[in-house]
Amino acid sequence: MRVMIVAFVLGICALPAAAQSPEPDDKRFTLHKVDDGYLRLDGRSGAVSLCTRPDSGWVCRAVPDERSALESEIGRLAAENAELKRTLLDRGGSLPGLPPRPPADVGVGSAAPTESDVDRVVALAGRLWRRTLDVVGSIKRELADKL
Image (cartoon, rainbow, N blue to C red; front, side, top):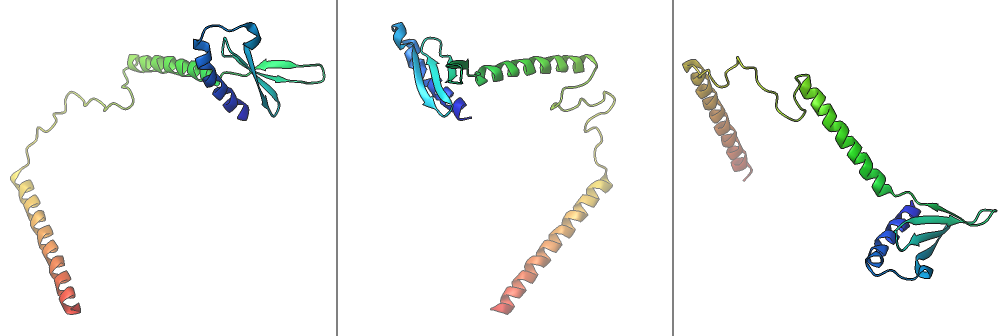
C-alpha cells in the first residue's frame, strides 16, 4: 500500500516535468528509496517501476496503475448496466428508481368524499382538540400545585 501511495505522489510530482521541454537522457529517470528497493519514475512517460535486487541482479517491474484499471472497470460496468436496462425495457419492465405506472383503468382522485366521511373527520378533529385542551389544563393545574 505504501508503494502505491509513493507511486501516486511521484506521478503527481512528475506532471510539471512532463510539461517542460525534454531533458537529456541522463536525467530521464528519478529513483526514490523504499523498503523493498527503489521506485523508478520515468520522467517522459510517467511510468513507475519498483526496482529490487534479488540474487541474480537488479530487476525493475512496472507498478500497476490502479486508476486506469478502475476507469476501465467503470466503463465496463456502465456498458453492462445500459445493456441490462435495455433488456428490462424490452421485456416490458420499468427501470428501478422510477415510480411504477398506474394501470390505465384506475382513475386517480376521482372519488369525492361523502358527507359521512366529512362528518367523521370533523368529529375526530373535535375529539383531538378536546384532548389537547385537557392535557394543557392538567399541566397548568400541576404547575399551580407545585408553586
